[in-house]
Length: 486
Ligand code: BG6
Picture (cartoon, rainbow, N blue to C red):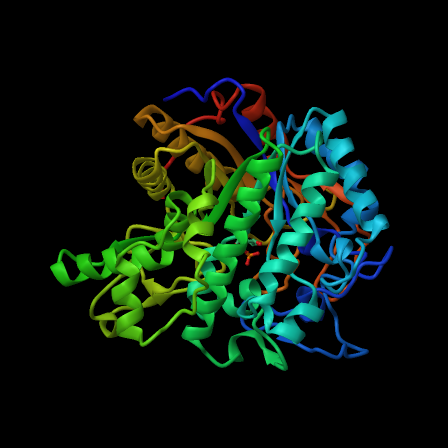
């Protein structure tokens, strides 16, 4: 097995709206997730622009990281974390997105968090916005569909770039931008929810609007990347995509071409623009076939060309199979990809197909395509955990999932991939983005918080906590024994 490079950034990833809570504390404004109810695997979460008095809104208290960050970061440090990927809540800094001055109390919170990371020798990797925006911007401009969002985002980023100089070096622009290509990304990612009330998957589908919104995101990301490069030469800026690997379901050439086409649009389009600085030619045909016209300003091309990233980051949870004849096959679920069921793979309790070898394939493909340093900034298993009577939590399923994926990362490093780091998703249990649940847990650290709104927020160490501690201590050499592939 391969060795991970010295200085490899082992750690975990969290996002503001899924962990912080304190949704209306110290001047914070209402964000889109703050108007989303809890849901489940079976029942969609809902958007309710007016808060319902007896309804549970999981982001409001989330896991109370806002008040417990010191304890949490100390526990991550105990595991040996070298890096923590976290995001800034836009609404803590600009509560409605358009204030003349930023909210000092919100800015001061992240000063404390970044200082605390540094005291523990943990490198913060900061996502500027992770699946959230001020609800005021969503309702006024229809989220990223509004051209105005570019200037709002740029002002927010300029403010935090300046503020956290010397504390943060690695920045990611927008989380999983490419999920906006699919219907499911409209609410979570693009916030195109003006006037909408109802289940998140009931938002009327509008592909043209989604690609317009994505264009605004791409221009905004390029503008802030260029700005960071001009003013802060020490900053390293990365893009972030969700990589859901797709296989042809059969060797029917039609399946192979279908996968090539879908992979381009779903997995590659956004990072192609962010790494290369221009729209890939394959999008012309996609837009023509779907009747989509994206409005572009005269200087957008130059902006995209100026704002290319320094490194490439992505999330990886699963793979799917595509068939040109889908009616023949059983399907499986996922955060934004759906496809035929792969008979070689097991699925998680949420229907996500577990595919560690696919991670090796993906890392190689990303590196081959871009020749830029790569970081895997999300990966993990959402699972039900049981607390034993003595308080212990045995999670061999999570250890097995992570061990198999880390083993394949090592293979990819041996293959020659320039891999900077690995931040597994949700090292502390947090709210699920797709379903709004607490029951779907990813953590090494258990949080006593439940879907009925009960719980003490107390933290405890799962078995995986000690396992990951050993992995980091040995720089990935000791993965805890033999790995059996699914
Ligand atoms: C990614 C998101 O899509 O997947 C995270 O960036 C999210 O915000 C993670 O939490 C896992 O998805 P879920 O739906 O299980 O929380």
